[in-house]
Length: 490
Image (cartoon, rainbow, N blue to C red):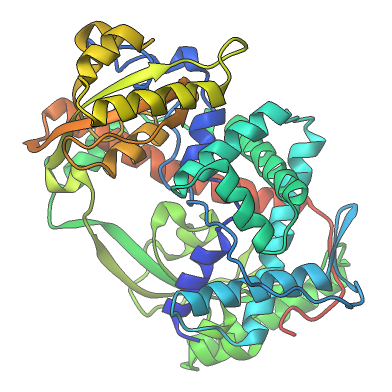
């Protein structure tokens, strides 16, 4: 299978089942008191996010997809157990339904569909990882209220440019009940909470790391980014509770494969024939990644290798024994504001109605819809903001001035980015209430040294979060009891 096929496949697997998206994080993760304004800036309170690295939500969270209508569910299928994960099971029905879903999304997007065996193996691994994380959150005693689920649903709907009623209609048209969807969303919010506590809160960025990041890019960005490594592996998996004799035999098998690879055998063919890793169909290739996004054992094994070389020793991990090869390395294309040295700023204003026991969200929406209708028919936005907005910017007609990417909470910024100058949004829900947003103008501006460091800090934090999250998930997986009842490639 071609690598690009799995890249698309992996993206789709992070759709509506994963729900680890910026909109949900913004709605649930950070206390409102912490999100008042950017340090050193004279900003109105309510929607600006802090620039401190301690609470910034990771930008790499995958976005949510909405279930597609028309997915026919199998009606009479024996629920055979295909995997046991700690004290729960994954059934063949779950596996096949999820695989069918992914195939439908790929075809709908006009993308190549992987071979069924490859698809089923990868989907089962993802189901196992999802189950492990949800169980860890539940075992940690994390609870999510109905109100928090309601807020997450609003964020999901807004992310997909629809209201909650339309989202429910799409969910039910896909064959899933609304109760089941809420339950799945509740589980994923639990995982978000656990990740915040166990991963996000522990990642810190130091000034020296920012200095090194900027130095690697010539201060204001260069034509290339950090070095990326394309690593391939052959995994000889060690079963749970394997005896010492079994481990020795499997290590000997890995050592034999290492000798073949060092002797000139085709590594990709060896991987396709022998590896038990998810990448076996691609010759063991994991694709290009920065060193911080590789498993620690792999990073240590390949960092000093020349492209095309095989690591001299078998690498051991909780999963088993690995034969590792550095297929290639390259300077990644630089991207983002820190690379370009310029950003797009937006001049924006808003009207905020705060929600609470005395102001239900539905009523706030109704009032702002009425205001929007008046303004679009000749009313004055600034006057309406002064009279009705409950944000500190009201005295300035709702004007927030020129804002840069990352300064506003995600729901607000995403809605703002879709507006043309002078266009007024529909009511937008954030954790602070309901807003009307109007974009006045946009401009390109050079990054100041301070902003350059802010973006560098965010990028370094993002890289460290990805690596820390990967390590955390691998640790959860290694501690879980997983028993496969089927061949994962069938």
